[in-house]
Image (cartoon, rainbow, N blue to C red; front, top):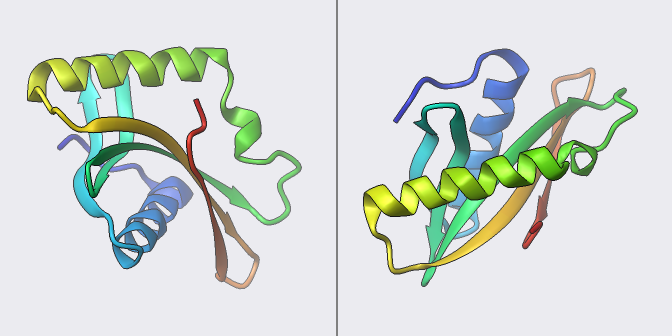
Length: 118
């Protein structure tokens, strides 16, 4: 496991991990890195390995989490996943998901889980 994100990103990832656990996921890795590539969370539920991108925003942000998933991010996620599978030889199915965490001015938050983003 590599270094953990800092600030609002770290808080968002903590919230995402807790959400995943409370919804029946086992956290396999957090902030897995291979050189330039990183996977925020790798979680397993049943026969599927979930590659989870976490995007954290303030409630006042104009951009949605989905807006940040561009073609470069998709290429990076796929490459990171290929590297992970080469290292770990997992026979599990792969699914790419997004968790959007929105933090309001009072410290509260909302979580949106979007499956199959690729």
